[in-house]
Amino acid sequence: MKLSKVFWGIVAPLAAIATSLLLVSGILLLKGNPPYETLKTMIDYGFTPRNIVAELNIASSYYIAGVAAAIGFKMLLFNIGIDGQYRMAVFFAAVVGGAVTLPPILHVTLIIIVGAVVGGLWGSIAGYLKVKRGISEVISNIMLNVIAGGLVAFLLQPGRLGEQADGSNNLNTPILATSGWMPTIKFLDGEIHSFLIVSVFIGIGYWVLLNKSVFGFNLRSTGMSFRAARAGGVNAPRMIFVTMALSGAIAGLTGMGTLLSETHSYSISFPSGYALTGLALALLGRNHPVGIAFAAFFWAFLDRSAGVLDLNGVPREIITIMQGTIVLSIVVAYELIKRINQKQEQRLVGNAGIEQISVPKAESEKNA
Image 1 (cartoon, rainbow, N blue to C red):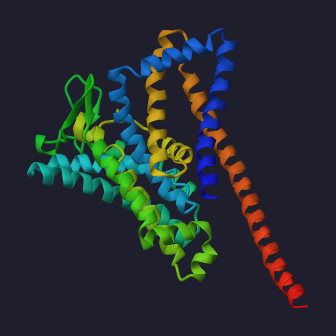
Image 2: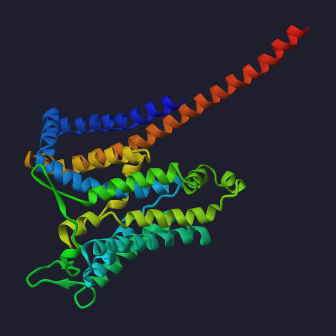
């Protein structure tokens, strides 16, 4: 039974990707673009040394967003507020980090802790509203994303917590002192953010938390059945609140690699859209840390490869269509797998029941 689940868990994402490729190939044919040559161009471009380095850096942020979404999914919570949590976290981490000068390790640690705490606090608002007021975390997080964006834009103005260089239209926080920078790792034709190593430990910590701790057991059991968890003595409302806070804390670390190893300040040009990306990666990776890692790199590869499409007269929106199709296909595939597994479990239970009935019957015939 376990091997069957592993098999379907691998087949489902591959089938989703294949379905997306077929749809995209059809669209390319309708537009007069050869599918094979177009896809080959994307692959060749995406796997150049320079782009591999860029994809690893992008994938690091995507991976953390995916883990944050997966923590919520394990509790059947739809944390669409990752974008707001990440923006608030990175902004205040940059402000605090830019206001102090500490020894290098302490300075970097402070920035990371501020990011995690702010992200956790912002995420806990949705958890509180769900537990105390019964408000859907989807609705509250959408509103919180808007509030976070407006609040950061307001505070980023010159004279408040932001500044604007002469001759520039960009607004940013003060530059971090060099003691607050994380080094980069030279690899191929570029430099990888060393925060990539931290993202690996985040994935390991996520797996250990879920599978080797009492909290992880309570989280998974509550996600499977609120009633059963309560009957087993688990405080389900408290688990909801803590899970949202934990998901927000992880989301708050999403942009740390960019902040600490690249820009060294927060600005209005920081990337957005991590909420939907994180949710898509958690679905594609089936909430497993290794699956999310492959999904994150694949997503980063698609994003990076889109750059070569315009040069070849192919609309880069093809990538958006491909990503959307993958998400839709994976949802359908997992629903089919769920039904297949349920039928297999019912069949096993039925066979076990028949065996239990047949054994006493055979013994009674023998005694007679």
